[in-house]
Length: 115
Image 1 (spheres, rainbow, N blue to C red):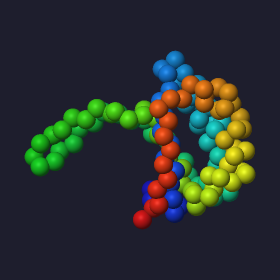
Image 2: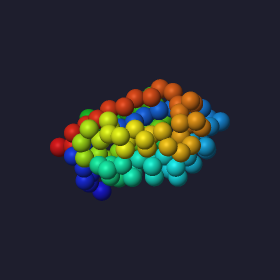
Image 3: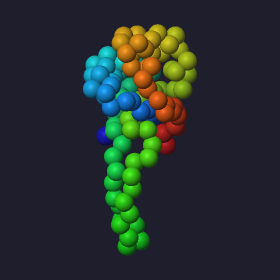
């Protein structure tokens, strides 16, 4: 499915194995619903990094996933969405701040303009 927004926010992080089930449950059923209510936030897609192989120039290369294990891609209308009062309120809502955020490591955030 094509990206419908002008920008994407890519958030990646690791979570300890003993917190993964809680992390996924809260992310999908609590955190994302709060953030999707923010004006200017569209679709959200989550992914988990995996090892893979690809062929190039006649050679198959095996690649281990070395980045953060989990990534979420938020479609946003403008980077200013991320400094709005609605965003600030949403990221502090629900169970995420107390039950997940303290355990998230290797976090990164990046914004890209869709071409």
